[in-house]
Length: 101
Image (tube, rainbow, N blue to C red; front, side, top):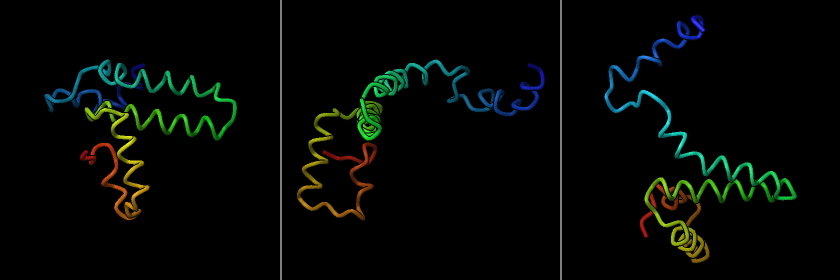
């Protein structure tokens, strides 16, 4: 345990220098719990491609929630934009953190 502390000391005391950094990871763990549950549920998708699609969709939905975007509105708007010819080179505009409805 002491070797672990010595090896990661800089990271362990980082919260002392920056008040924005949490002392524990509980907030992050609560945030990613739905993602972890989706990943576990994807084990029963029946096919590797289905599980990958499920994981991708679950990731998009949870990222929307983290960015205070309603997932259904986001997904329908993005699909509509793609169908209407949104340029692939401008795909960054459609990512949840850049999305403007």
